[in-house]
Image 1 (tube, protein in one colour):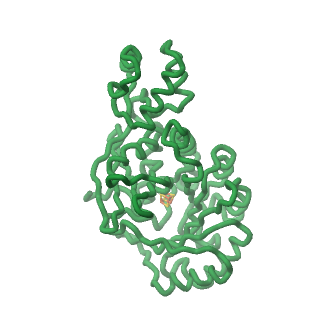
Image 2 (image 1 turned 90 degrees about the horizontal axis):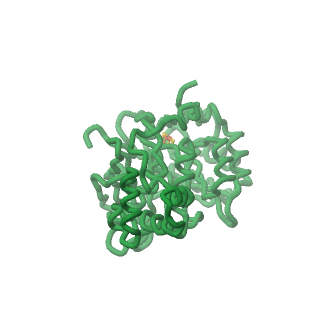
Image 3 (image 1 turned 180 degrees about the vertical axis):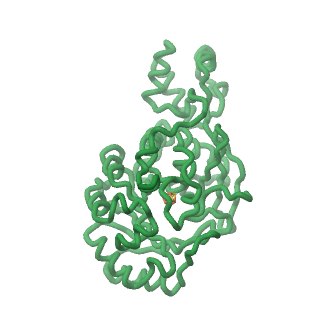
Length: 362
Ligand code: SF4
């Protein structure tokens, strides 16, 4: 079985060649343990936590209410603050912003700020450098997996992106839909949710956070038990034959097991699962596929997001005709599904869904 079809094998053994001691990697409990080890009172840990995650301090010396002695102890122990820096920022004509995020070992991932309502953005976070899942329609999948991002590298994307927002704007929603399969990096993603959802950290409610997956069934079950955030499934097919052909992960976790995991996922009250369906012209966009999809999803609390495929060179796929997208949507609507067609944002800067990853000529 290929690496793409057995992601667990390579998962947690991939470690970053980056300095180990960094406050941005520490959750609240780890921060308290560190401060206790240094012989300081517990409230100092809470101060540090707020400086790192709420105020986004990038330097120990910026933490003015933390005593110099503690700052000196941290420095002596080799602790830094901040895991990533922003490289190039590309702005689309529709105001989508794509940020190159530089990692401390020289790797580069991308995060995207997507404009929503006035002054509000959704941020799309990367969870891996590359991706092992090899979905055939996705540019990131062509890169292969270099490594998982650490929890600190994920959280820090949110902290550093603040500076790239227009004045007065803020990120109101976070989606783990950038580079990588978030649930392949299960521990990194779950650990990142600590500071992201802590009121003394970044302060996002679990309801404002969505984790996307290509369908790693055991990890969907674990996520539901650990941190029941909103879940988005990148489904993209209405039967196993089509899904096997475009998403190798389906050979390991076919649709029957996936639908079972979705049925059992403990959604927050009044929430729906998001079903992402990339429409590939002539592959999965026929009327018959729409009808089959309606049957497959029957009884599940879902909203369906249709995404006409975003082209990148070197694949045999085609973007479906607009009339076929509308016909597909109508068939599902006629069967009482809530269906939106995702407005393609950031297409001109390769920031749209499935396009993330450094190009050789970038
Ligand atoms: S669609 Fe997601 S899971 Fe599939 S290859 Fe791309 S980044 Fe990986």
